[in-house]
Amino acid sequence: MPAGIFITLLGYLLGSIPTGLLLTRLFSTVDPRTAGSQNIGATNVFRTSGKTLGILTLIGDVLKGLIPVWIALQWGITDQWGIKADQWIALIGLSPLIGHVFSIFLGLKGGKGVATAVGVYLSISPLAVLIELFLFIAILWKWRYISLGSMTCAITIPFLIAYFRSDAQAYFIMSLIIAAIILYRHQSNISRLLQGTENKWKG
Image 1 (spheres, rainbow, N blue to C red):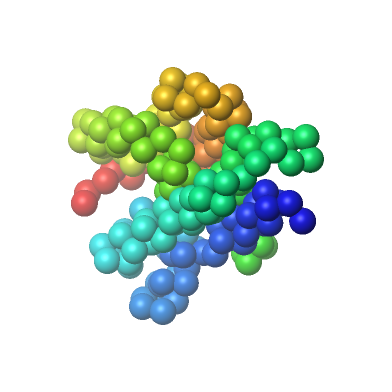
Image 2 (tube, rainbow, N blue to C red):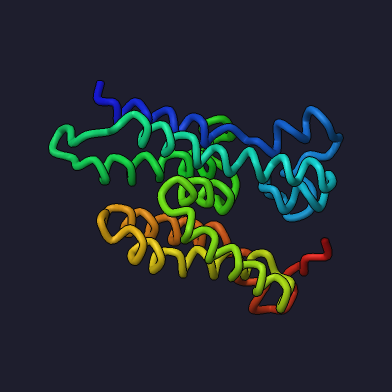
């Protein structure tokens, strides 16, 4: 089995681990799937189970995206089966995100993928993530909507990936797919933003 396929499968399984749900089952009486926004991500865990579990969920979800890509880069993935090395990396980068959003452990349901995407991008272009962090903070400070900041960063980071990683077109295509998935998972947030009923961040 080519290393690329092995790490892709590993990435999907790792991404499928519902970090927020596991943490709340261990250290809280609140099920994030039935409380707040009913999402297993860090923001909802933060709001419904407290700051510590929210931060731990964020770290865990970021690591789910970072670890598979880091392994692939350290492994030294090469061209295999007519697929170039950067295309393997892009496929591996998508695998934990898809696992997080469509978890095999939750009946192909899951989170919205933002934190896991951050982990993927950290492995590929830390500078792009740093720039997006400032953009996210600015949006959160101005409008107090985490969802708006998350979606804006998802939409804009492909341009930074195209600039900083112009050596690998596959990364740009990967970032477009990630943006599409994140926007798809934020449909309810978009509706609430348009209606003026989206929850503002009070942390």
